[in-house]
Amino acid sequence: MYNSKSRIATEFIDDAEIKRTLAWAEENKNDLETIRGLLARAKDCKGLTYQEAMLLLECDDPQIHEEIFTLANEIKEKFYGNRIVMFAPLYLSNYCVNGCVYCPYHGQNKTIKRKKLTQEEIVAEVTALQDMGHKRLALEAGEHPTMNPIEYILECINTIYSIKHKNGAIRRVNVNIAATTVENYKKLKDAGIGTYILFQETYNKESYEALHPTGPKSDYAYHTEAMDRAMEAGIDDVGCGVLYGLENYKYDFVGILMHAKHLEDTFGCGPHTISVPRIRPADDIDPDEFDNGVPDDIFKRIIAILRIAVPYTGIIMSTRESKEMRAAALHLGVSQISGGSRTSVGGYAEEEPEEENTAQFDVEDNRTLAQVVDWMIDEGHVPSFCTACYREGRTGDRFMQLVKTGQIANICQPNALLTLNEYLEDYASPETKEKGKAIIAERLEMIPNEKVRELVREHLNDINEGKRDFRL
Ligand code: SF4
Ligand code: SF4
Image 1: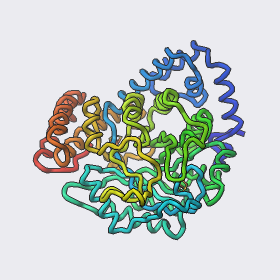
Image 2: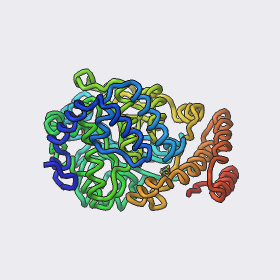
Image 3: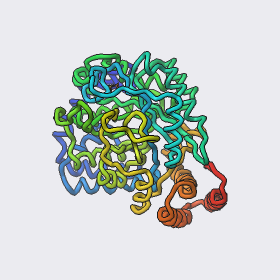
Image 4: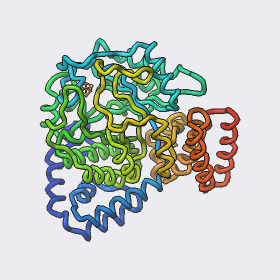
């Protein structure tokens, strides 16, 4: 029986309720009056239920699609302005005991080179990331009790936060590691992580079990209930995601919104972020083996409807997607993107030799961070290296409160301008610097609160004079 507040995975993600929702949406997809009513109501940024969101996704009227895209863009602008937060993944180790059939790190893959970064290598990688201008990392590691125990992850986090090189600093470390115990989540919290990220891959239990035949990850309930344990341990910010292409996208679209509702109903705070990865080629992995591929036009609608349904949740898109898809997605509600990413273990300090490929997937957008930043400015976005909320203790429901009342817009934009100015001063080419300074000057005048505007103007000057790390 469906119960959004249950602590049992199969009750808060209820298969029968998902199937009922899909059938109802299919039956009502031509009810344009109801759909237009939903869109009108969603303008108030209070979100949509999973049923309502699914009805929007099922609708095949091209005019409605345009209305969805327009509304998603409006909501994104309202909450976050035109800032886009930048991050990079750092793969620590590809040793893994699980058998995920879509991932080249699966334990049975004998062709991929296995690698685990030493603390010295992490110093070199993070120094290279700092020299690119990154301030926010997402750590990635396979699940392996002896090669990547929690102590190793904690040691890596500690090393990363301690590296101070020129004006560089990693100010927020997000962590994407396997589902674990409340005790281990407490250790991650104490180590000062930002978001704990764990992708569900698919919410369909039957498919999940087929896709994860061996290893601890094969336990659907343990994996699906992981965010509950993380929140119990005091980690306020959790990041969800499904891997589109594994299962019918409609099922997983409803599933992820049910998960968000469960977290909101149970802990008073939905997911901090939702990622939208699609399956990509990799060593030993052929995406054509998975016949649930999501075409670009539907993928764009998924992103836009997520933005409308959970307006307070950040949406993350990685370099799995092409420049063209990322350009479109930035106008549909994506609020964070990675740039200059390496999906191999290491690879920032030194390019990995081709024959030693340790990548988890092929990157589609191969541009450097400098190129991505330059392009975003050309597209009218403000690339942001902001990590302020987490460092100011604005996590979990304190953060959600700010977003839900629209106050975050007054904080995000100033922080985006300050951190972009740091980037321009420390890392940008003269051409990017010139364009970036121009967008800062233009956007500074648009900060509504006069006092905040003055403060930002002062700190921009401080940054020009060599001072660093101002935040609101
Ligand atoms: Fe291991 Fe994660 Fe890859 Fe599964 S998806 S094989 S758990 S690294
Ligand atoms: Fe993110 Fe908060 Fe910075 Fe806005 S102000 S970009 S929400 S950390």
